[in-house]
Length: 387
View 1 (cartoon, rainbow, N blue to C red):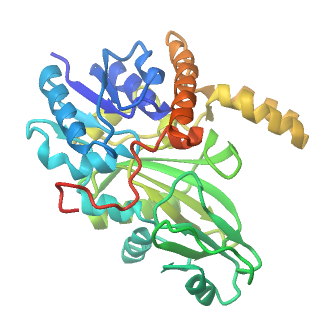
View 2: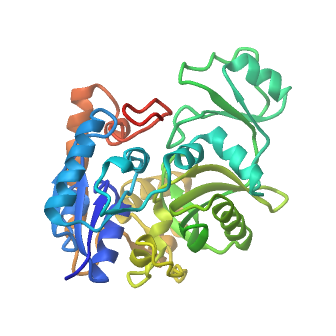
């Protein structure tokens, strides 16, 4: 009988990617999410889709629903895709002991998720990071910066939300920082941005893909993933993974400065878009199930979210006079969503966006927030965990 995986966060392209790869390698795939997830659920790779309680707003229901699915579907492995990974880690002791859960202990996960916690871990294990400090407010940030160019960001944030750049130093009339908990102030480094995604097992780095976010939505999420090779990034991630004994998925954002050194800006202890650079036959399912299989990415061509490349990338290229470069990039890349023999996820993604728009209107928030607020964790105490 084939093994069974429950992929959480079916709203995301990385969940779809996981589902296809697990199915191609003989697993029975189930997906689950707390908001509509037709993107992954519409794939032929998925046996069934399950609705679960939102972990941020109903953690007890989240545990209850996962436990029920694990029992009824005889799940062997639970694999998160998005920020629900932190809740899964925190509540893992309350899930059936028979199931394997592809997350690290919560203390380590939460430290990596914290932009300040990452700085301490990185320094301890030899990973280069920008000069940084944790501050409660603007006055302390200004005193630490002492006129230097800096970036300010909440200790817990995502998608570049609330980030402030001060290339000339923090001005006297800068507005006070919103009450979002502690902030991190860092030296502002100029250079090229890179991202990495890796899988590890008990301190052993099993596979890593690195890419340049060649096309992106402003300073936020990328929708075009250009593979690059950086041995220094591989070595830095391997050292941190080994030093912490890390198991699971781990991703980093990097800045390569004028000196050529890559420094880590933040960590996501979960899947990110570098996953798309692994082929369908890459043994990631075995690696995530603890079989310590080495996994090599496919660096032969870029990947893209073609619908976003058309809807956002093309207008940006026209405005910026970069149509020729856009055409070349389009021709080089393969689509993540619509693939031969499995094109329905593209329609599922469009339907999901409509659902998120309705959700945003009901909740009085933006589309981005509506699509992630039920799984976000910003350092709050979690009931029933002691964390």
